Amino acid sequence: MTISILSTFYNDKEMLKRMMDSVLEQDYPDIEHVITDAASTDGSVELIKEYQSKYEESGKKLVWLSERDRGLHDGDNKAAALATGDYMMFGSDPYTGTDIISTFAAVLEKGNLDYSYGGIYFHKDGKIIRTWSGKPGNWRLGWMAATPTLCFRRALWEKYGPFDLDYVSASDYKFQIRLFKDKTLRSESIQRPLVCYYAGGVSNNGIKSNLVSIKENFRVMREEKVPFGWFTVICKMFIASFAYIFHSHKKIDAEVHS
Image 1 (cartoon, helix red, strand yellow):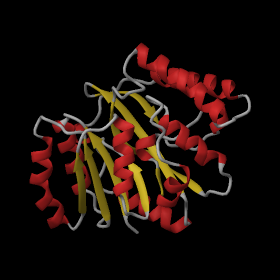
Image 2 (tube, one colour):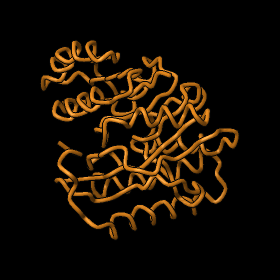
Image 3 (cartoon, one colour):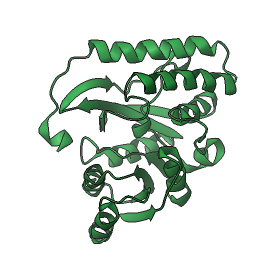
Image 4 (spheres, helix red, strand yellow):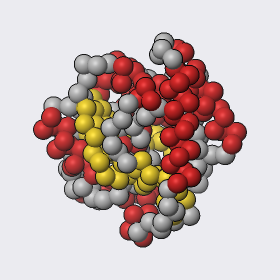
């Protein structure tokens, strides 16, 4: 089973290095790492070229492309188009251990699953500001999987993708809703932190971006014809607020975010 990890970057050489190091440290051999770089000017392309030999030595496959794009999700779509793995997952943030991809592979293969997902740390300045437990939930009540931990069959992307570029931040949510509505799919959660997500994404970067995200979530419900979609979005807002307000801001172990 080959798992394709799809990463998109633009002028973020430091995070690019962290992600490539994290992928190379994975103990699972059949990994294809697809990187789309939006024509960075900070030395990212040179870094990718430097790492090509490291991927060859590790037995992992590196595929990369550097050209201008229309934003994060356009880069994601380009990466998905280049992927050849049996399963795919989007991720540009490092994993919390060296066994994350092998854990996914074991769970997916054992249950012959269509997709799996798990927990995630949101952190900022070395402190956890929010935790996604990875426990399964009811998407009609506002639950969703943490996108960087969602590993799914490539056939599902071909059926329910690509990401809708008319959205700024809710393209991944729209994709997930399409998965959740398909009751024929088999899934299982991995209830442990799998990814250390660096806060500041397009849907978590200030009040303005949060308002855009909320507006787009309502739009997703409408376009996907979800009954009482407004209730789902309100529940989603409540879950996110609760997680930020009541989670203890404990420090992350150094090895998690180094």
